Structures are given as structure tokens and as C-alpha cells.
Image (tube, rainbow, N blue to C red; front, side):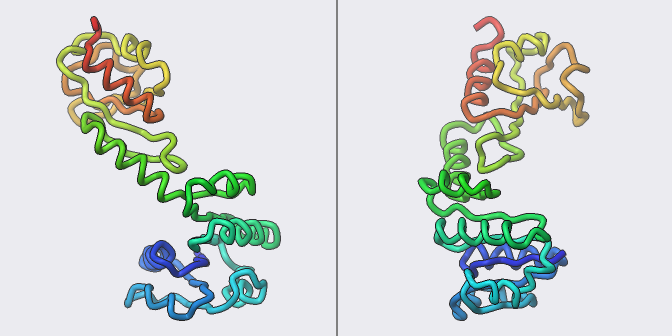
Length: 221
């Protein structure tokens, strides 16, 4: 596939190398030629220097044949304008993703209806999880960490109890699967919980914290 990365900063350069090593055709665009020095020494994609707001620069980068464009400059305003421009004028580009640098600017980016990745917000969510509790593990993050999929270990106090009773006290969680002895089941296939079961749920941070509390309290708590 053909991808264009706009902005050869730390994020853009890392993304470009990951895509390149994944076998894709990658073009990195930046206004500053020196920024290309951040690219990995083994990167063999193309680079294009020029005004990232100019249609000529985008066309030299091959936007007409691009499958996706990632806008990863350090300016949220610039990212919004470029992302909107690409989406509005180049309908052939299937996916346009923009980086959110300042969490306070997310609202502005969302107003453009753009696909957003906010490394700051996501990182803060992840650090909070690791600092506050180690009894659960996030295995998948959607969006910028607002909704995640977690794995929770069932303690002895819940052994022999109906899984429905756990669902009732955790109404904000969507129970996805239950793993027992390395084999996964749908929650509807399991009636009684056993110590050591791993329950996989989709929820927000508040939901998983409530589930942790319920597991600690036990079914009679």
C-alpha cells in the first residue's frame, strides 16, 4: 500500500519506518529538509520537502495514488487544516489520520470529523492504570483509550458463583469472553466461575475500577 506521512518529527519518523518495514511504499513530507535526519538509517522510502499546505507538495508526494495519509506535525491547527484538505480534495485517499498534540485542542480536531490519535491522552490513561492498580491488564485500546478491553483474574471468593451475578454488579462492562485453562468461551457458555478464570471485558476506566472493587469485596460484600 502507498502511504504519505506529513511531518518528520519523532512520531512521523517512527511511523514511517514501521510502515516501511511492513512492506509498504512510504513518502515522508516536511517543510524542513533537516527533519528527515530523524528517519531511521535503514529507511528506503521517499522524502519530499515543501510547504505541506501546497497542493504541489502533496502531488509531488503522490497523494493521487495514496491509500492513506497520516498528518503528524506538532501543530494541531496545521494537522486539522491538512487533514481536512486531503479528505476534501483527494477522495481516493481511503484513510486520513491526524495526530493530536495538545489534549485541549482535541475538540477542534473532532469538529472537523477527522480520525484522531492523541498520544498524550492515551499515554496519560495508560500511566494512570499502571500507577493505580495492577490487578487488571488492558489488552486492547480503542480510540485514544476512552474504551479498552481488559483481562481480570477471578479470585477464590467468586469461585462457584454464577457469572450472571458478577455481570449484575458490573452493569457498565460488556463481558466479551471467559478463559479457563487456556481455552476461551463466550460468557453465555459458562455458568459457574472458577478461581483462576480470566474474564475479558470491554469498558471504560471507571467500569474496570468498579469491577476490581466487586471482585475484592466478593459476592457477599
